[in-house]
Length: 341
Ligand code: CP
Image 1 (tube, rainbow, N blue to C red):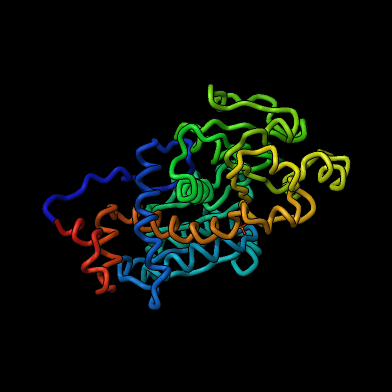
Image 2: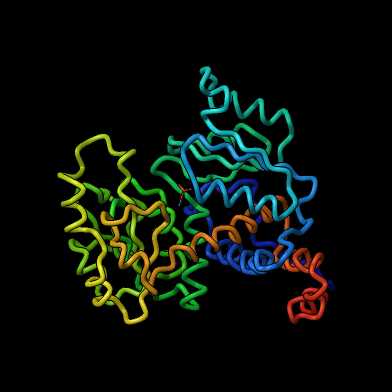
């Protein structure tokens, strides 16, 4: 390689999309694209993070995020350790920070944290030398979900700028919505929010932007939309009676095939999962050709590989080299020629 590529991502931690620049976001997405190919190989492993240690510290349930961080680390040859609240000394009264200090004493390179408290990942990042990745903190942020959503939109639509994205449902309690609103508006999408009045933030504060607005009904929000992003009702985060009943929610805010007809002809449907069929999304829509729910999961792996890689000091072009290192067939590919030029 003739020159060291300039890295746009030199952070110790990934805590949210709020603080990311459009250049950093694009850099993560480009890097994720170069990693996607590894998961299509027969032998899905590269030595890129050999000798690195990643601790997955999950204090809230998770299927997609925990599994994909673990698989991502393993595909990059990192050593991974999973710690859950149920199997850790948290059940004996140890605090998050004391747990983290003990883990830090074993010199991990990265700690991936999911926690029910907003700000937990920030607090951890201030405490430990290891890089910290926020895998969801309460109703605050879920940055890798927004990054994988952006990768999925970009893959299907070719761009994010000027797309109309309708985010529908329990926006108030959704870290996915918050991270997506920050990311998508930064990249120039026009974001429309809709949901029950009790589930929309009263004041958007810093979120108020020209390319963000609220619609009263799902019909109005989906009109001409290119992307329909459906949120789960976060019953575990609701302290008051936000809804008369789930049945009523489904009638007024559940996405059905009739809504798809109002959207742009090639509109795509997204949902971060887990989905509640018949509540926020009908089975007909979830299983339709417009649904990219499983593409999102697949892209989550590539995004998490990219994030693990970049936070341990990697650069995008080197990522391509790494993917080629154990794949001789790639030696003759355009990308490989480019990366060695
Ligand atoms: N989308 C998401 O965060 O799913 P999990 O809760 O299963 O990780």
